[in-house]
Image 1: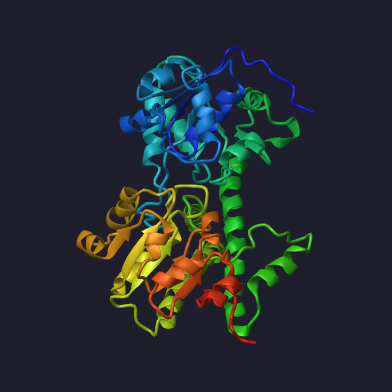
Image 2 (image 1 turned 180 degrees about the vertical axis):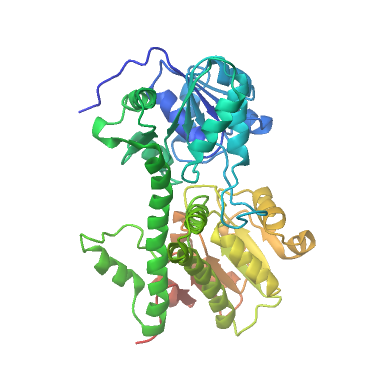
Length: 472
């Protein structure tokens, strides 16, 4: 049965931040609530221009159709942040919270500079009551800091309520996740005003989300739940990846082990797929945030426990890269390696914390040449990620890295193919054709457990698959 339609009295929503979370989330809200005006604002004019163009800046299955259907009707994209704040009743704060690169907590703590700037702007501009909603992933008790900023900078008689409404989106299925969420979590202060604000946001989601899936909690519980959810999911990936190393050494098959374990209803099958390592904007950042929080609370054993999840992820990437070098006769100097996939997973163009960056950096240090192909990541993004974000020398990049237009040209004349993203097209390529163009012995390294191993071996490839050893 469809959820009962709720009245929202022509509520207006503003979202500060037109990124991977704010864009899809508010596009779906606009789609499901045609009587609510939704405005997404960002100080980055080029990003707003892209959202208003025929080539929106984020690839996510189903997103383009929703944006094109609602844009200009009740969904708007603007760089006029102040106007968006002034007219809104509910304001989502959905800005970037990267891991700090310097100062106290560097490498672990979240950098809340954008959160603070957005909060300060709301306080300075707002002339009427606003419900301010944390949508960004933030450390526990960030709302307390936001409250102090709002109170210290607001106009006289202007009041605010703060809610926590973390996102639980998986890139590649974000629209599906938003349309049919497992749960919508809304945290508030347990005061009459806080509970009223919580109900106001719940009524928006109740337009399409069944009531039993809208979970209301205390503010701090909601903030911590987001970190905990990602930590627990990443923990499962690191657990199966640690077992993949044992499988390779013993001759066990990690897919078989994962399948058998997943049949236990207490464990379940999800997030038990071994790989070259997890990536994306959330898992590593949120675990490191949890580590820093634990250290700040004088819980060193807890901090070390969660830090080991990240350490195992880094080990898995390093172990896989070292295996490539060993298989290619202990040197890849001046050899050419095709990298299939640069996005951190299929069905997204997101490259944040992608395993491909670590792999390519490792191969470049070994003086290899790289040919990269990804169906959704443009060449300029790869250049930026490697040279600006990860300190690869531009001269080295220009000399040794080539971005190919398709999988076939990427494999032409290479010594090995390394599969790092589980794009479906990599499963069905004409590998007999590819084999004829490669140097021999031709090697394929499957870091995603997707390749047709027996078929490739019959063609003549030497196939090395993560989590599957040759021990009989």
